[in-house]
Length: 345
Image (spheres, rainbow, N blue to C red):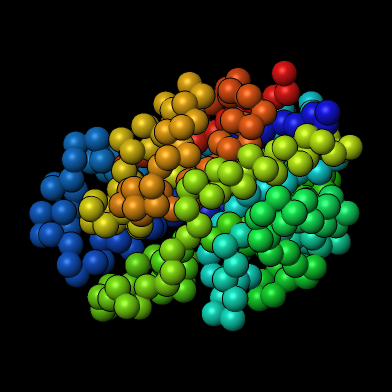
């Protein structure tokens, strides 16, 4: 049986920029004209949110938030290096990046020879022209797609990009695991999941629009159900466990996102809902994960937790519980961030 390492990280985009800009999503949400009057200034916010905002619009808190996130990224990278996989399979969401109006697959394996992308502008590393050039692993990707189809999962696959070299769920995962810039040479297999579902086209996989109300008729079909993705992750782990490869399975995403959580006026994430799922994951309560509903996911702005649904299914399939986990919560930095390391027995 092949050995499999399981990992989970966040791909939080503001981590690429300086601390003074880390709260920019909240500042954008404060421009919502339908925001209740009492929530338009910190005076009306919950006390912990005011404390995190402080007197510098979150800059000091951003430094602490960054330290927590980078600490977990480094710990995850150390586990990856110690394991030294043949390739890293990454479950990540595509937010109107590679997949747009012409086709939105429920999930897609990218069996590309290689992947090229650049550091984002204004990045924390001061890089202006750095290009990442990562090898893919087409043979393993094609084998996995074949076996999944044979197992009843009608899996899309691609051999080249469509609209975008690679979504930020994947590029940020690589950049953050290489936060110290010591190099990242592991072949990757991006496994794109349509996490944003009803809002992937209607909201272009991003922030809500405030100039008009998006009607139900304008929304898209839903994302794959949590149960289906849990079972997809289980099948992926089963197939790869029978393969000759040494594999790292990585879920890349934050959990509840403020800008997707309408019940919190798009200001802060649903941390209690995330804590509920986190506790279930830590204890190996996988029925809670598999039986979670798509309605609950949307209600709590947890669309991106669907990437972790695949990871949870894989862990259940291989009888694995996490060895290390971390939960980095926040009121002002848009999303709960979770980290996980589950090495082979």
